[in-house]
Amino acid sequence: MSPTVGDGDVVLVRFGAPPATGDVVLVRWSARPEQLSVKRAVRPEPGGWWVLGDFPEASTDSRMLGVANVIGVVRFRMWPRPGRLRVLPPGVSK
Image (cartoon, rainbow, N blue to C red; front, side, top):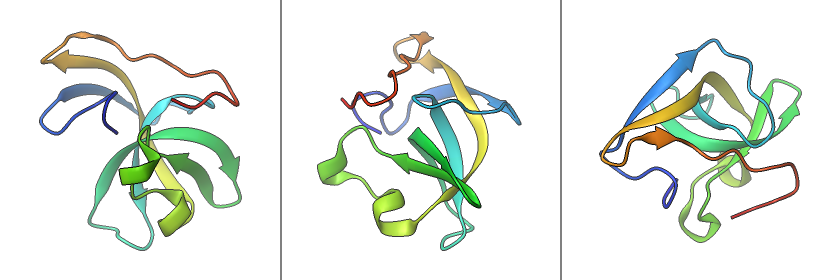
């Protein structure tokens, strides 16, 4: 999810929160149930959410793995650059 969230960043997740388009979300994939990922919620789909990374050229996301189960919504980055994560409006990509 670089540049929004990088490896080693500490984030605060609200588990069970309903996602909205543009939210940064924590997801699990049916194809990779042991893997957790942080992605951008694009749209609800039957069975989950279509999610994409903010750097599509280097992201493994719904284009490869299909819809994802959203576990929670990422609300803040706690470290290394504390602050609220920016929500992108529908139809806008980084």
